[in-house]
Image: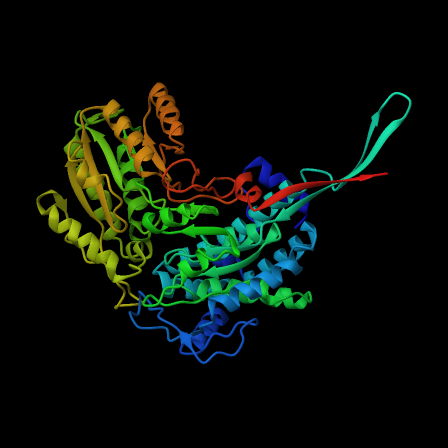
Length: 543
């Protein structure tokens, strides 16, 4: 891939993908070999190229489809040893030019692309994503995000000239000073992964640190290690091939019973932290006073005012909150519909009819044997189901639970739960104004459009929001929604139907998280995601 093409794609923000998201675009033998690689990895020790001998191993990954342990164990290494290795490796890595680092990192992505199918099975059986989502999100989409980060990095790191001769006329003589400008990396970066998107959310921080010259310690979620371990393995292989220390990128493993994330986060040698996960721990990370990049939880909303085709909108909404059983940070949670109903070319759809329409769309999706199971995937862990069921038990009278049983034809033990709908009024804010991660959505009756917009805006300001979906055929209202929601740093998607879904953010085009509200302080990928990882220094030499 020509670098000029990547620069143009990064600036134009039009559709661009360096890695094809369609599994059928790849050699037909790769699926079988990827599955075999996955199967051979089960019930074994995963030893990375950098790993020293260890007598202690961790492994607690459980397939949400098989509901049995994968039996993969990773060496437990001492935190101080990992950090010391990272500090030493940093001194080597920082001395390479940005372009040298880029070539090495690009090679690593190319090597990962040869393992997309293994990566898909690894993701599927740790997160519960469907095979297609696992393939796309952990493979091509993650690699494209990494590439976007690298290209942004090269652009920012070359903002100032490397060297310049500065001449100032002083009348009878010229004052000449030779100057150079250097982007100095901050040190060791810690990247903390999550259990639902172990590469897509992790890779940007890893490659942002690496392209800017920082070494990296990756602390994955103990129940989703295998997918990011593939990236680490290929990174380390490429580093070794270039006569560099594999400890420039290391994997730090822990267990749920003996977490070590705080040990790393609080260590003086850790200068940068990337975090994806819940608000409480994210707030703690931000409180440490270090350079950090967080993606936390938020409450994503849908405003329904008017539609050109309500059924098409309802189908899109139902799919959006059903996709991966609502276990996406971009999934909508609250749907706001005015008591007066929804305006359409065919007349008013009353509030009750709108609820019935969305319920019918969900029912149709769940009754589709070819679509239901792949859409839902599987629930990553039992805790999600317990929390959802507890919420339903508290609001039995308001809850719509479909009498539909979804079965996965390939995995009859898959942990599945059909999404439920809780119907409530705007006044009952305690019910819906808190994040409810998983297969549950709230339909909120408001007095009018103005109240819907006010609640959604206040929700984003106070609780955070990564996405907002709005349906309106009124241009003035659309402009108002965009202005009001942008003022609380929330992007809006308007009138999505068909194959466009609010959940999906495209590399080289969409910014993921704005960094301006409580859902997180960073964005994939703006200049700040790169620039905060290093410091510009200028030196002067008298000629």
